[in-house]
View (cartoon, one colour):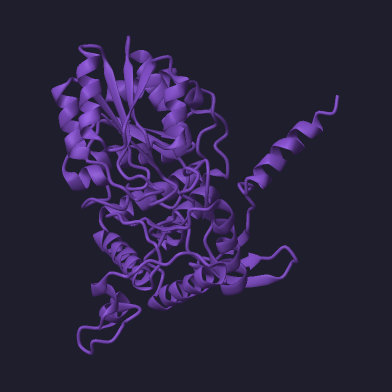
Amino acid sequence: MDYRRYFEGALFRLKAERRYRTFAHIERSVETFPEALWRRPDGRAQEVTIWCSNDYLGMGQHPEVIDAMVETARNVGAGAGGTRNISGTSCAIVELERELADLHGKEAALVFTSGWISNLAAISTIADLLPNCLILSDASNHNSMIEGVKRSRAERQIFRHNDLAHLEELLIAAGDRPKLIVFESLYSMSGNIAPVAEIAALAERYCAMTYIDEVHAVGMYGPRGGGVCEAAGVMSKIDVIEGTLAKGFGSLGGYIAGDSALIDAVRSYAPSFIFTTALPPAIAAAACAAVRLLKSRPDIRAAHQRAAHIVKHALAAGGLPVLENSSHIVPVMVRDAQRCKAASDMLLERHGVYIQPINYPTVAKGTERLRVTPTPRHTHAHIVSLVESLVDVWKTLGLEFVEPPAHLHVDEASGERCTYPEIKLAAQ
């Protein structure tokens, strides 16, 4: 039997739908980030500026984080040696879990090899340990959360995205049975922020547990980087906080924080924790250094928010269709898979601007976009180049511009149009 033809057919379908994904060979540099080298398919190297990194705060390049990783690797080696059940728990992971529990004001934390795995393991295990549990899941939840819900044997219902009234209807209908509300604090493709305080209040009123994914918010929001829940003052009202070490903290891994009995139960029952090799101590040490550092560096968060604010306003002033939100995520809408890929390719090849296209299944068909993620290390010159490059690509491909808000493109002093008002303001 020709098995190969099935795989070739599957790939052909992806390419026909313009959903086939290619990986750019990008060589990052600690000294020059967000500038990097793109190894072109023809072997030549081209300088590019990265605008789609999830290392939002640049912690992956921070000297204290790098030093922690290097020193630990030299002392204890590169690998973990196996699962924590068989090979033992490294001191680096124990210290990291203490820092994470402290960050969220919880009794305990548990580290996994990725944020995807932490959601899969924790949601399914918690729901299965609650008899007759009903999972109430936000319609826009991340794939890892959806897979965690699916893996559980519990009944599940979907509530409309950030719709408190619909959630309350489902809570009332569920009656006295155990209920687990599963939602995100910040939705990474739209930049929407959940009404976390209101959801926590509903959970308290109807005796439901809460499980929140703070992956795109930890390190980024709150006085110490505890996320949206810390910023909203409701960390104590959320039962389980899940996060990643690979975005705001610039390393690798995922975790949950919560009540010590719940954390111990997940540790003891979740197969994807029990049978998975632990994070290497060097990675855990780097993550721990980043967590500890960001607890005391609100200035880094402020610089990042300022960069995101300037980018949004500069893109809007250029007439580019930025999806409005109140977070650091900057989606520039294309709404067509083929043209989104073409825009990404042209930005890279013509302008040296690296932004990967976002298409189905990450987002719904017809909502394809370029997802821009500013960092504190993007300068005003980088931002000007980004806007000019996008404007050129939009014109070349015949993509639709939008009318800039009046307050963004008129210089109040001269009455003249100002393409980058926020950059001008920041320079004053």
